[in-house]
Image (tube, rainbow, N blue to C red; front, side, top):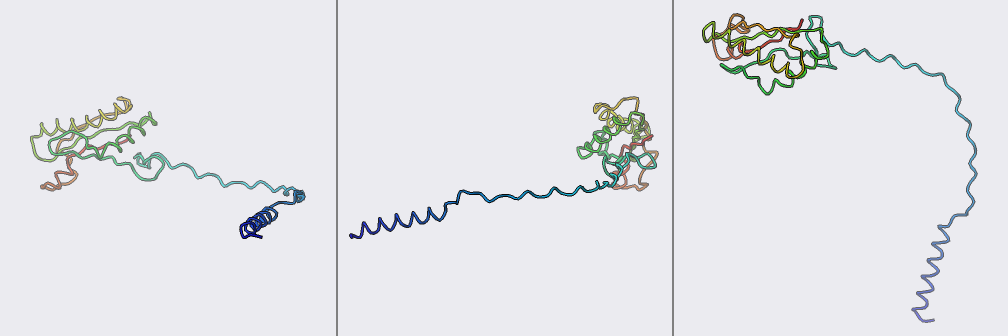
Length: 177
């Protein structure tokens, strides 16, 4: 037999062995029915923990869903009554809290540092409180939930006489009632 025919015959035999080895018998194994699981007593789930409260015992709001108090003091630049971009998220959360709690109200206090005349600082403190009020009302808080007062330089957070103290005194504060 020539070599070519021998190779062809060998290839055919090898292929037939492979096919025969992979073929199934065609009769499936019978599956025995399993016994149904025994009924078990329903286990009681422990009660879900109560949701965190919205306000602490002093009436200050928590960040919703947490026990972390929501920031209530907002600082301003020298001689400015413009909200800082970094405060907008906290103010939006305050708006949400007030919209969800229509019986609650806030007093917005405007404060200044000691520089400037008394009259000028009272007016600037009012503009700062008004900046917060404008944000809240534009976010859907009822104007009837908001009162404003300006203390000017009369109630400093820091009694110091340097830039660090002045920076802490230029602020607006939200007091919940």
